[in-house]
Length: 597
Image (tube, rainbow, N blue to C red):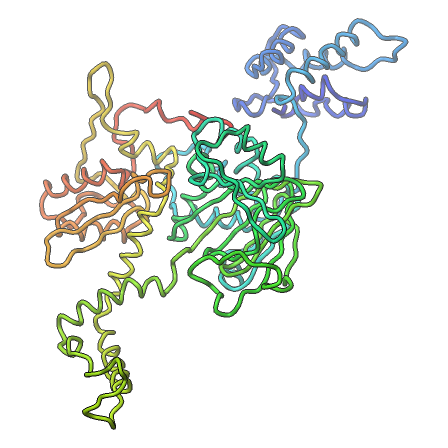
């Protein structure tokens, strides 16, 4: 809490020197303010010292706001330090008050020093979501994802990052602002997570240690009890949480926002390592890794992979130091630092004897390569080619396994096979369904993704918080769409249509009802009539803009109504304005806030 153009309550009672106390005298006339985070003392009538003390004791800024500056100056003058030989009742009382404030109100009146703010770091994407806005200010989620990523790698511009570093080489971002990332996740959040939820060894959390070139996983069976975990930690073991986004709203928001921008599944692991310890052997992963240092520090070593392991499709075994040679980079990540390295880079991290480490690893672009696209394209292309071209169905040469035909010794079956296969591959190109292969990757993304996190404004325009409600057995606030109602997709990547051959329907896969646990639910999908597909494509093409229901390419009003209600009930679309006639009191960003958020 702070006092604008007024007196800091902490400074009044807890200043150490006369010089510091002199700084708190108001230089300008105080003004009124309604913000609870900023207590402004204005020229209102009050009851003097008693009212100020009551405000401090009861943590009530409304009372403090009513006190006038004369009363506060009176309090300041009475609280000046006197020499011990001339100590009076007022100074004794001031000492008692100072002791009370120090003992009982440390969180409320703790004096914070402002950390240095790096360039391009003024945008805080997590806190920004808390600010109120009207429903007319619904923002583009993809641009919000870009802003979040820009903040995450600041001061490096995203274009520079993708041109020079992405899938190419590491990037270390050092910051003087140690608290840059701490609003995301802390040790306290980790402790609360285990106390307020049921997490299980192996499924949700691993206990690991690396000693003498050997990594050991020490997972007991059953539920992870926080007391037992911290005992492991106290004995040198690292704790890895595999899905903190399931239990922490801020990490979930981070994941949901980034996956909308990147168009790929985003994962997060949390790692807690005690001092002078290492949890994992040198290895490489199959993801683009962003190490976000939250607490303490960790020393990292990076090693070049073999050429065949550059941008690998799968993670590696655990290497010995003899196998990997010398590191090409050694760097210490302090609080507020970030380290990026591409998939395939061999890495290991260790704490020193003076500090623990807590970091998040944000993982991107797993199984999102051209080879993954071709894996979807080629089988379908072969099926279609075999249907239409007899050359694909002709038999292989006799005796092809022996690589010799006794009836035709001069001809080599292998060379003949290579010639035919080369010809068939040329023909196969015309049967490649690029759109279908991309759609199949989109289907996997939808199934793998976390459900989207809606802003307060989006919630007010969604089926979860708008529309039919129940009170005292009566349904009210019924939603009715008309031709002028404007709608858009909740998220571009929350759906993926997949057409079926020789049918009059298509399947619409969606992620809005996915579980917060990876594959915690079966794939969610709707079977829709084929004539509805152009309406889906119009919504996708228009995204993030809103379109009027009447403009959807469907023949009748009944078709449009059925189509809209199908999508609305599953949370696939939102409206531009809330449809209900009454305000929804359930929407409050502060609802259910807890330490594990």
